[in-house]
Image (cartoon, rainbow, N blue to C red):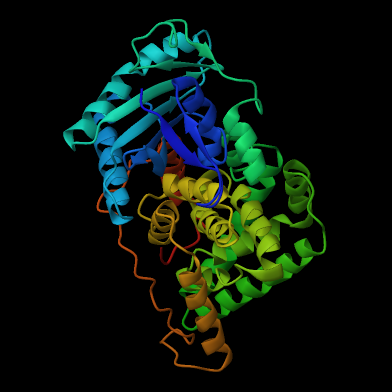
Length: 430
């Protein structure tokens, strides 16, 4: 296989040359910032030396019938995105990461996913960009779909290096690059509660919906509800700011304790209004950014039962604050979950695309600062009584990727809950 060069810091710093499938497999968590689980990962190779460029990740579709269209869209998105950033890829590396199901071995996972690997290879090849390597990673081992040499890629697979012992691990540690655990662990911080407390939270959402919906639909009340939502959210941010964060699990548990069911329900329903959500996005820097991110995570966990789709707004806000504060892996995870719930949610789509293309979030930060300043000075107002947001002009992807399997369950829950009196609140924009 070809050698590939991965930068470990600035352009002036030392670079790492990866010469084998084993070194590519070991490098994957450092390319993404986390250990991907149940994922297709594709990485573009730029220039004659095969320098790592753009990369994308998508959950593996459960149905093999979805694999051909997904493969075509992934190949097109990666190649076109690379061209927009300045150059057509010279090649692509593909990773398929999935743990074995009950009674299944890693090798059986590899064989089951072989048609998907082949479809990804042909999809890239049809666009005149070859796949130089395709690896399956499962159960602590990896297999190559491209390398026929049994000396380096035996049929039984090859064990992954122990964490922290590879050349890439040493280079990443030197450069300050961190791996934040597994994708599953990162998603768990944002997913709905599955504890007995979820029933209490659902009842609070029912009650808040019954109280807020008539007000929102009433003349002149929508703006007042938005102001009340932001005032309560600001209070909660101040409350979280006063409590220092610890480890992820301890921080999340403390945040859950500090926010009542009624407070969470009120803010969740209020954020379904687009203008209210846009103003909440202004808490994206300085001392308010970290507690705001904790609040959006906590609210995402409170979107339980038939309110699962309501998490799209706080997930998008969590992704935006994470990206604004330099946490690109966390941003991609949060925005990916938002798009899994609602693939057409425009704010999440634009942020996800911009983050994946390596754009600078300062453009959007500047816009939000100007809107906040204009509002404080009593600048031009729209019909809603607040300054009009100037849209950040980002191209909308021509194709949206199919959501991962669990999204269909969320939509089913949405349909089941839609007919329950007072349960759904309103969602006035995306």
